Structures are given as C-alpha cells and as structure tokens.
Image (cartoon, rainbow, N blue to C red):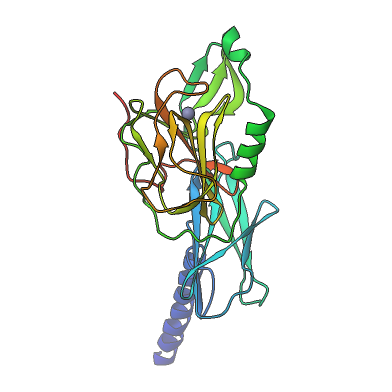
Length: 293
Ligand SMILES: [Zn+2]
C-alpha cells in the first residue's frame, strides 16, 4: 500500500512538473541559461517586445514572423531585445515566431495569437480639393526610406516615454477611413495631438535625425531613427529645429506644431513605425495622453 502511494505521488509530481513546463512555454520558452519572454497574446496595432536574457554570446540573433526575418539587438549585459509591430489589419489568428542565432544557442519556436482591436471609423467626404492634393515623388521616397530604417543604433531607454507635444489627442491611431461610405483600406497611421501653432515638438527618446525638410503634402517633417527598427515621424510642423544626421536626446526639441502641408488645423501628426509597420504609440510606448473633449 505504501509502495502504491509513493508511486502515485511520484507520477503526480511528474505530471505537475510537465504541466507547469507547458504552461510556461509561451512566457519563457528557452531552457537553462537562456530565458526568452514574450506575451501569449497581442492586439492588432500593438508592439511585441521579445526579451532575451542569457550569459551566452549570441551571434546575429533574429526572429522570424510570417516568413520575414527581423534583427534582435543587444541591449545590455546578457540582454537582447527584438521588436515586432503587429499591423492593425493583421488577421486575428495564431502565428508562429521562430527565434535563432548563428551560434546555435537559440533555436526556439513559439506561438502568439493576434486578437482584434476595434478601431473607430471615420467617414470622409472627398472634395475636389483633397482629391487633387498629392505628395511629391521625393517626399514619398524620403518617408519610405525612413520607415524601414534599420540601423545598429540601440534603443537606449525603455518606454514609456513622454508625449512629443503638450496637447490632447483629437484623432487616434488606427482610425479606419471610409471615403464616401466605403472602407478605403486606409487608416490613420499615427496620432494627432491638437496644440496651438508654435507649441514645442520633442523627440520621444534618443535618436538620430533621418531627414528634416518641408514637403508638399506632409508639410514640415522630421523623421527620427530611435534604433532597433523604431522610427518616429513628426509632420505638419511650422518650424524645424534639427538637421539630418543630428544626434538627439530624449525630450529634445525637433520643431514646432503647425498646419503646413495638408492639415485642417494646427496639430502634430506623430507616426511610430516598427520595422516599417505603423504601430499604436499609445500601446506601451508613451505615458497616457487625454483625448480632446
Ligand atoms: Zn494624423
């Protein structure tokens, strides 16, 4: 009888250990000496932080998502971080993430489920004036190049950062645009912060200026590379205070709020991109900002 009890306890313990291990799988998927953490679930438009802690020397660590490979950066002693931006139009489903490095210490697969986030809708009546306004080839090239900027710069400070301007949000990220009642496939790729002309616009964190110039559609524009594939785009500025190549500190002034280019009133449009994907800046990147009343 005693023997059976010992066996039962042993088997029960084994099952428990196994169950715990499976349960931990998505949060800490690696084994000894390596810990990888990422959430099980992410909302459309949100950013996933893949954090790795290890004393081993990783060589060119990367992660794969939907057949695309993204770099993982060393952020400190024994620490590495990779950023994954989830498109707001990404189909809610279970996706696979594969993490690896050239030294072979990392070779891990895990799943992440993308869940729906209900973004508000906006119906826009297209007027002749709007239909006639277009971006120049030069500005599209500059913005395209900036969005996909992937330098070896490190994202030096952890979020949440300060808002880039004092003011309230009058247009949220992800707002689905319906033109004359039909979904255009287009959505708002940033947040609009309503503020008077001349209000200071600041870099959310350290970075390097990619471009700083006046465009026809976007108006006074500054793009900042924060490292790790994270890029900020500040547009409709009335004044630009920085130059391309300039190294910025967190909260440093980049310009002033305005309504240059295509804007119906003074505001800052701030777009945040992760490896080229527009992400919701209010999801983990900056401290809460009030919506305008
Ligand atoms: Zn905007």
